[in-house]
Structure formats: structure tokens, C-alpha cells
Image (cartoon, rainbow over all chains, first blue to last red; front, side, top):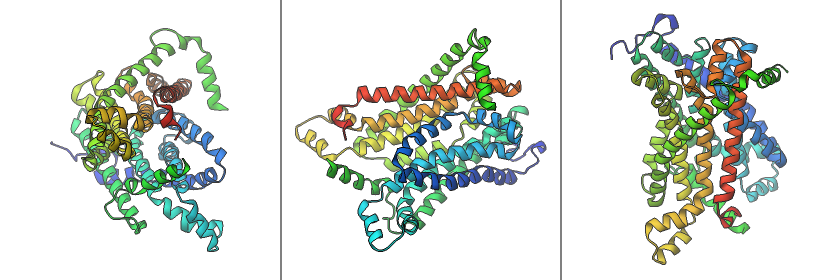
Length: 232
Length: 221
């Protein structure tokens, strides 16, 4: 592949520069989504009637195609990075809220009662008992959000070169150089896989009590099953 | 409210309801692309997921493949496919199928894996063949989860099939892409609304399918 890393000068970035831009445009929205999702999920856990309507609303928001979301936002935020990052934050929110709610809800009642009996207040119980136990579920949600965010940033190329590595796709078409598109797809895939692996590593670090090598779902599965059996 | 005005203006303009660029035509095209992509993805994901879930082998390889497929950007795949293959339906189907296979594959595998082992053992003890165990014991119990995997794949396809318009095909994305280049926000908002409506319809269809297909004994749990 000749000229694989030969980025057209109109993009005003080197390959490494595009990667940095791409990471910023995709990871900042996920962080914003997480910050918004934590209190929202806690509200849904506290007030159970709130969860179904929130779930319905987020499903509708998730169904809005990213391109339409970008174009509508141009009216308010212009052709800027912010226009790309707001929809991505919303999509992350949509993925993270159910993940966090399910994770926090899966904390056994006995554990909560034990924490209360030990004199934990609601805030400390949330931070030191519920969140750590929900960590595997939250990280699973984060993995989905980060990977889809990295993929979706590229659509920003359509609204005035705001797509970081996606701009390479536009350039590939403009200059008829398919190798640039191959470069963009492979680099984005590599970024997604690396970020995914880093999140898995983060989970292993944050949950040292979980058995090594076991996948979190497999480890968590017996609990809901026995709980369901008891209810029957 | 700005956006609501756009929606109202789009749907009350009678010119949007007729002809090859009318709402019924574009809606139908969108449904066709989505169904085709979902059918191809299900034809790949369901058998593999059922088989690996039944035997319990290859779970790690499956997770690896699904992760890699998820990492591939849909828009990038589309542009690449068009550059390499040329215009047509095939380059649009490639990213849609790549997008839809991982959720179907992984959920089906997990669904069959998480079936309570005692009825499976009982069926085997009664002398059922493996294929009958899979289709008459494991699949009915796993069906709600299998359907949820198909549902999330379908929603993602419906929302992503808009990119077909970027490579000169029809569908509801036509309004969004044309609206973008014509600076016609009415069209963009209208197209986005239609896609959201189609996604809600998809949810309704899967809810109805679940009511019809899932056995009442499984549903009650």
C-alpha cells in the first residue's frame, strides 16, 4: 500500500494527531455520559416507577440516526466538535443507564442490610457497597459505549470535517485513494480494541475479589438464577 | 419549539406524501433494507450461536470475534466497500450485517448457555436426540433472550440503514442526507422522526412476537 500514512494536507493533522483528536472526540462524551448516567440511574433505582418511562425515552433517543442528530445540532452549536460530542454523550447515556440500574439492583438485599446494620449512611452505602458490587455491570456498559462512540465519531466527517479519523474516509473518496479508507477503518478498529482491553484491565483492577480469568457474566449468573428459584 | 415546528411543517406538506421521494416509498425501502440485513445477520448469528451455546464450546473465540466485529466502524466499512466494490446494495449490506451479527451471536450463545441444566439432563435421560434437546427444550426456554438479541440488532440496523442514502440508495436516510446538502432542516428532522417511529414499530413487533412465540410457562418467570 503506497502512501498508507500519507495524509492529505487539507486535513491539517498528522496520523497521530488524528488519533489524538479521535480519542478526545469519542472518550469525552462517554465520560460526560457516565457523569450524567450515575445520578439518573440512582433516581431510577430509588423511584421504581421512573425506570420504564426513562427506558422508553432513551430507546427513542438511541434510534435517532447520528447523522440526523448532528445536522439538527448544527443550528445550535455550529460545525464544531461539540456538535459531534453531544449526540455521542446522549448515546452513551442510553447505554449506561440500564447497565448501572441493573448492576445496582443486582446487589443482594442481605448485603445492603448488613451495610445498614454496620452503620453505613445512604451515601457511604452507595459509594462503598453498591457501586463496587455494580462495577462489572458498569464496565460492561462502558465497553459498549466506548466502542460504539469510537465508531460513530467518523460520521462527523459529513458535517464539515469534524470526524477525526473519519475525515480520512471523506479524503479517500475525494482523492480516490482507497488505502486511506483502509487506514481509517483499521486504525479505528485498533483504537476500539485497545480501549476495550484497557476497560477489561480496569475492571480486573477495581474488582480484586472476582475470580481471575472468569468472565463477569458467568460469575454473576448463579445469583439471579437462585434468587428467581427462591421466588418461585 | 423549533424542532417541533420542523416536524409539523414536514408532515403537513402534501408534496412529501407522493411519488418516488414520498414518505410511503422511502419508508418501504427502509423496511426492505432493514429486513434483508436482519435476515442475513440472523442466518449467520442464530445457527452459530445455538450450536456453540448447546455444545458450550468456542465461547471465548465467539467473544473475540464479536468484539472485533463490534470494533469495525459502520460508516468506515460503508465507504471502504463502496470504494472497493462500487455502488449498489451489497456495499450497504456489509456494514449492516457486520453491525447486527455480534448482538445476535453473543445473546443467542448466552441464552442457550444460561438454560437451567436440569431439564436438559432430564430430556437427555429420556433419550431425546441432541437436535430435539436443542429445539424442543433449550430453544423454547432461551427464546425471550434470543428475541432480545434480535431486537437490539434490529433497532441498530433501522437506525444505521440511513447510511444507505449516503451511497445513493433510497430509504429514510434520503431525507437526512438530502436535507443536509440542501440546508433543509425540515427534511432532516422529518427523516429522523420517521426513523424513530420505525424503531418504535420494531419494538412493538418484537413485543408482539414475544407474546405469541414465548410459551406462557417461560414468560411467567
